[in-house]
Length: 319
Length: 244
Image (tube, rainbow over all chains, first blue to last red; front, side):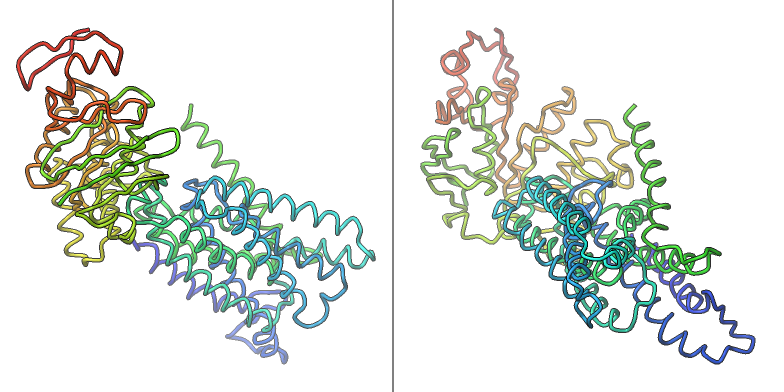
């Protein structure tokens, strides 16, 4: 059941220190280090690696929980509209010009995520119905997307426009300890909430009626999902912009190595998400390109063909 | 020790249904389509809140129990036996232990007992997708039994099963009742209800049309009145067949 966990932990233990060495300036521990090596390590690479691990873990866990909640292997944390909500908040911080002042950007993004979470809670109401909840999430995602486009089209300056577009692509470039400071506790809290929801998600594998007959309170489960996905995805978007596909790919790849209960997939997905984002971010750093490849783009380039493969396999299964 | 409904009403589905179910009995709920059978079962399982009326388990109002207390007492087998992920039989049965926090050893013993009772030991590691329809139905029932409920409420558990599997499941229900559990089944097949139930409750248009021993509640007169079908019972008691 927990077979992948030790393996993934070992892989992370190897990849994390290695990731600190990779980048435009390669740090060779067996050769003379450049004078600014310490600064590169502590101020640039370490916060970046910690963020990659944290956000990857959050996205992986949220993806596993979402697929369990919607009982669908194609579900993604973005479906609840929380990521677009957070992105809208961030876009507004650029739009108003406050993004450059201290904590404004993450605060705006987290407020956007919280707004989406509150709307979801209000719309889904007391029913606890998964379908109603999903439709509400899709509506919020579409509304936030439209408002984002509006903000972009009415962008006050070309500079703000370029900042918004670049930020939306998702990246961990130039992130600092400030980002670590808010993203790590929020994401960890979110993963803990999703872990608590695990048993109820297991019961939901049998359908809503059977889950309720097993003592699951659908309303409580819904609130746990809003809080868990909201915290992980909201913190992720606030720190790094939109990073897609991690939450889709990772649980899907790992499911076969677990007993397939949603609860036994959450922790391995968190670990694998952390590993995937860490490795992908390293690759973005070291690829010989004029400017660094944006992490969000890299993962979409990886994720889209994967998604297509998944669909084709499902089609074969249906044929 | 009873499961009782008092003047149960649910808009458009049930209208003043009162009955007291006894443990150790197999009770069949029968009736034409849309009579309110599944609604009644869902109310009895605590899954549907009635618009009016009250439900009680051992004299205590059902809605005063916590969801987990209710889940430990009442096992519910839905009509649609869906399982979202391709779980193994053993993992599926283990889900029945979710309302309990009795420790790993007790959970394992209960799952083991359920698998043995349904003759599923050899399939324990097999994913649901690799089982036949009959084996899947047994695995889904094993999930309920692993929860060691005092009441088993099953919505059309024999649908889509061949005759041999229907009889095997009915024998299982009889064994459970023999062990003191209350068994309530929604059944469409009137002959199965006649031959295998201790008591039959016939619903029609959301009200109880007949309630009693199978001979009484499923008499030819009741069938004519409720199902609008002229039918005749053939054969000996316990092996009756319905001729139309």
